[in-house]
Length: 216
Image (cartoon, rainbow, N blue to C red; front, side, top):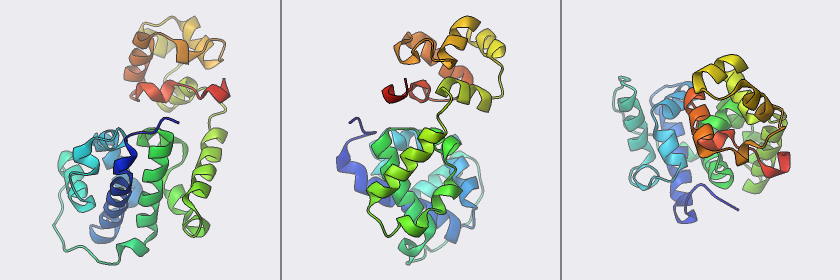
């Protein structure tokens, strides 16, 4: 199985994401969904998800929180962190989500589009008392249920583009886009230039357009 990065850094990544979520919510007063969007648009979610060592292991969750806010030009006041962070739902959500992202190798943006972060927090009961693999299985089921449509179609609709608009902006034939969305053609076998161009127009990662072979 392909994972997002070397397993050597997994536990540090889980602790860092968990601490960041807890600190942003309980110490700095952010709504988790709002902060998670900042994490994604800042570019640090992409770096984290790809295993950038400086991001997942080179700083603490608190330092990463401040880095995200600085990148997004969000003002804040530095505060003394709480000490009981591991008891919060947000801490657990970050800890569990980091494991799932590593396990699935999906980007955080892709996961968020299919299972919003507040839905993950709501899974605290009963999943915080279960083995993490139960959470992984549940997430896989949710994402599979939301993937009945081809990833290209789902992401195109999310970007609020028609097939014709996507064809025009990407300079890829309309019929080809229709065939990918209807799975008459396998986008996994498309040329890299097609996939990269579509990802650029749709504002996603190229790998987010690819389909699991079991769904073909």
